[in-house]
Amino acid sequence: MNSKPVKVVVGLALVLILMAGSFGSGFFTGNLYTLGASSLHPATSTPTAVSPSPEPTQGGTPQDLQTLFKPFWETWQILHDKYVDQPLDNVSLMRGAIGGMMNSLGDQHSGYMTPQEYSDANVSINGKYTGIGAWVDSTGDYLVIVSPMKGFPAQKAGLQPGDEIRAVDGVDMTGINPELVRLKVIGPAGSSVHLSIFRTGQDKLLEFDIVRENIVIPSVTGEIIHDNIAYVTITTFGDTTATDLHKILGEVMAKNPKGLILDLRNNGGGYLNTAIDVASEFISSGVIVYEQYGDGTRQTFEAKPDGLATDIPMVVLVNEGSASASEIVAGAIQDQGRGKLVGVKTYGKGSVQQWIPLTDDQGAVRVTVAKWLTPNNLTIHKVGLTPDVIVERTSDDYKTGKDPQLDAAINLLLNQ
Image (cartoon, rainbow, N blue to C red):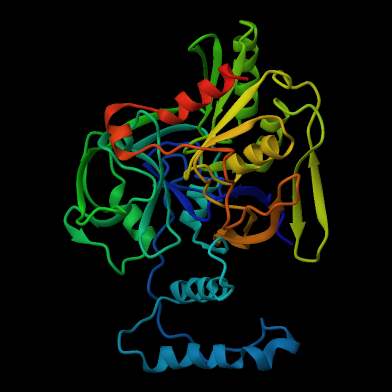
C-alpha cells in the first residue's frame, strides 16, 4: 500500500502554468500543474533503452486477470520481436500503457503523470516563477490560454482567455501534444518566445513576441477604491491564500467600507479546503458546496465561523477564466444570496481529482473522484455559473485599460 499522501485538488484538468524555474505552484486547482521544470524538483533521468525482454510471464498478473491481460502481454512480445527500431525502451512502453488506460476513461481530467510531471505538479500553489505568466489548458487539440496573469508578460502582450497557441517560434503546433507545446513556450527570464495565436472572431492568426520574466505572484491583494469600496482580488487558491485573505480583510474592513468587491476573474482555482476557508470569510453559515461521488453518496462542506466580511454588501467579479475553486466560492455566494455575480459565464470546472502517487517514484495517476454541486444543487461541470449581471469586457477594453465589469460592480454596490 502506498503511504505517500494523496493531494486533493479542484481545478482545471492538467491546467498548466506557463512558467519555468523555481516555483511553488501548480496550476491549478488544479488539478494544478506547472508549465516548466522546478529547480526544487530536478528532472528525473531519461530512461535508457534496453534489450528485448525475455518471454514475459504473468507472475505479476493476478490469477483472475491473466486471461484478460493475455492480449497485452502478446502485444508486448510482438513489439519486442518484430518492431523495426530495436532495442525498445520498456519504461516508455509501460508508461504509455498506463497513459492509454487512463485515456480510455474518456475523462479529460483523469490521466497519468510521469515522474517529472508529477514532481512539477506536486508543489504548493504559491511562489516564484519564470515564464510568460499565463494559466493554460492542455486537454484539447491545442494549448489554450485560460487566464493571463494580471501585470505579467502574457497579459501585457495582449493574450486573452480562449487564445489557442497554433505556432511557437514559427513552428506549426498542429497535431503536437499540448504538453510538448508547453515545454516549447517556457524558458529562462529575459529570453523571448514568438507565439502565433488563433482567436475566435479574427480572420487570421495573431502574432506575439513575449519576453519571459521572473514572476512573483501574491495570491491576494486588497485596497480601498472609488467611494470607499473595498476591492479584494484572489489570483489562486493556494497554501497561504486563506491566511493572506484573512489578514487583508482585517486591514480593509478596519476602514469601514460601504461595500466589497471580490475579484475572481482569471482565477483558475486551487485547493478545495482553501475554497471553503475563503467562502467562509463571506458566508456566516450554511452549505458552501456538495461533493457527490460515483456511488451516489455526497459530502457536505459548510461555512466555518468567524468570517470577517459576512455582513457587508458585496459583489463578485467572474469571467470565462474563473474556474473550479473560484466557481465554488462564487456559486456559494450566489446561491446563499450573499452577493451578486457580475461579468460573464465562468469556465465550468466542477469535478474533483486526486493525484495518487505510484510506488517507486513512477509518477502518479490523476483520477476524477467526485463532482461538486452548489448549495442549490446546481452542477457547474461543463456548464459554468451565469452571472446575475452580464457585462462583457472587449478586446478594445483590455487594450485601453477600461474595465466595464469593475465599473458595473461599483455602480451595483452604490445603488444598493
